[in-house]
Image (tube, rainbow over the protein chains, first blue to last red):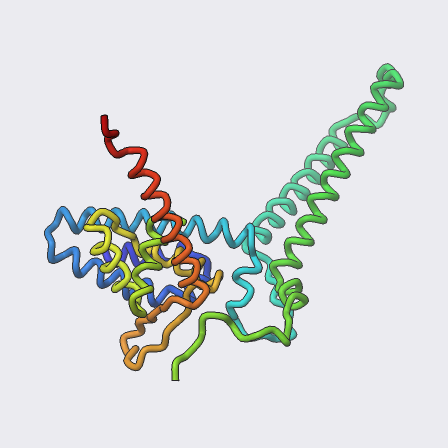
Length: 184
Length: 102
């Protein structure tokens, strides 16, 4: 049970875990130790409550991180370096492989069709009326604009994730992080 | 302000406390009615830290890695304001709910 609760901590964003993960792990240990003394039923209830709380909290933090990313910007995740932090995700590599395979298969099919078809000129079909071609042109244009929009969004998202935006938001003259007051 | 957050602030109003002590104190204050989970507690603590209602408190002995928190002046002012609001609400509720004399 404890191991499962500890593993649920990995549902939280990395920055959040770096900030509160160790504290939360200690509190979870203490809560489970206390629950163990009160019997199996109380222990099961405590486990369910803690698990639900962790899942709910992780979802909330992810949602908050998406809606208000600047709230996590003060947490240093790694050393600041001039090297770009952008990395191609594994999913992108897999997707590109699938696209490449599809292109290769399409070329092979086209070659097979070209080889099997007679070289004589095929009879042409009826010419489409003008409004059909206008509609199809509009649809193709809209689809092209949509694809361009998606690509633009992907580039912006990649830039945002890469830390370029975080670097531009960095204010060297800002005051030190709040909440770190140390009593002397 | 939700009840768990109010209880957390009330717990820290008395003295600085770390996570598990806050959970125990809120359970005690609510008479066993409100059991805050660890996830809920740290979600609330993060928001309160962000809003500067609470701050981290460095204890002399934090060898076990426990982090204590305490109320800031802003947090105390806001808590007093909330308590005043609740007092007023309770007073009005008592007047409305109390049996009328005939």
